[in-house]
Amino acid sequence: MSLPLRKRLPPMLPRAEMQAVEPPRELDGPPGNPLDLLRHRPFLLLWLVQTLSQTGQNMVNFSLLILVRGIVERHAIGQLNTAIGLTVLSFTLPAVLFSPLAGVVADRFNRRTILVLTNALRGVAVGGLLLIEARWSAYLALAVLYAITFVSGAVGQFFGPALASTLPDVAPRRQIIQANALFNLTFTASQLVGFAAAGPLLVKLFGIHTVLSGIIVIFALCALVSLALPPSCPPARAFPNARRLVAQVLGEIREGVHFILASPHLAKAIAYLTIAMATYLMVAVLGPGYVTVVLGLPAEDIAYLVAPAGIGVVLGTVLVPHVAGRLGSVRTTDCALALGGALLLGLALVGWSAEGGPNGVGSAETLVAAGLTGLLGIVNGMILAPGQSLLQAGSPEHVRGRVYATFFTVSNSVAFVPVFFSGALADLFGISEVLGGIGLLLLVIGCWQLLAGLRRG
Image (cartoon, rainbow, N blue to C red; front, top):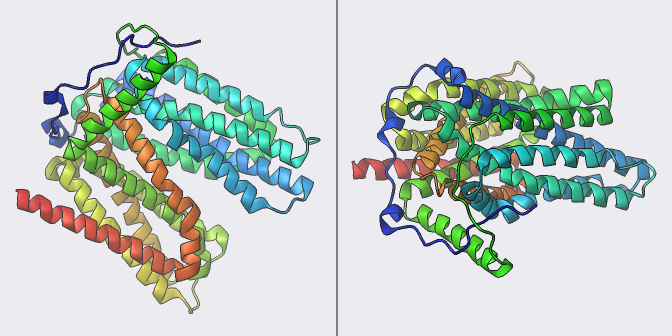
């Protein structure tokens, strides 16, 4: 069923609204009690939607790898890496294609309705995976799996901007950084729980089809919880013809981009969040090789680096409101970016020291690397929470969804680089060399921004 749209093309934003938006003073004030957030019912409901939905989605991601591997091995086609690569492409490509449209939808329609529909439709998509039968040919089974994955990924693009744009409406303004910090912690925890813990354990105990059935229940619960959220109330709009609709959508996307370019703080926040996401993915790709090739540990010992990073994220979540209250959101992200670059350089130095020598779990190199990854977790929170707070606070409600859609489009487009090329670069130049190059680049950018901020006073 078609959703109503405005009958005529919207005017561009007034000039006064296109001017650069300074970060509001409330973001830099003293934080409130973190427990107040979870006592605030609208925020609690949105947080439950995020927790359940993202945990379920990460369980889906793990299940897709198991399904693809089963199809490839059952038919002995011998192209597992290519098949998995196409699965990743099927899920990430919609982020580039649909994020701009998703932002327009988040700004123009009831966001509660969007959250309900996206969770329900992703549950239906998971149900489609249960219909793939073992007797199908390998290419038919993979084609259906890729198609379902693409559709599920496309639906998911409308969930992200709606969720992020709703957060400032349900969280107390003076606690917006804490709210974003908690959402970042939940995002990281959902990856660890859904993809690295619950997914593998439940598949091993109960089988892939039982797990997929459970994920359908999770998405259904998300849709029901979303119904309890307060609605957003966009003005009534009539549905235009197809040509007017395309022109309208393109105009509103262009309007959102113009708004971002007119605000240096928004542009900087998007750039920093994109750098943080791309760096995280690249380090994630290089992590297993760093553990096995550089440190010389068994592959299962990657937990010695992942666990400190997870603890660091928790500490960063606790510390970031206090640090941002003293330094300000902008300077906090500048310092964190420079520190992150220095820490990656430290990991590269540890790698160069460890190569060629016997190492173990208790070796000095392993212990130092674990400490550095823990500090990287803290720094990650120092970039993500203030950056997202700047995006939300600097974006008026009527354009916030398009601002977030632009961020998702840029960040997901950049994410193709680490997904497809970081391994090849490591094979050509070495894992430690690639980490060192990334670290040096981030250190230079962070220091340059800090100096520029000091000159501006």
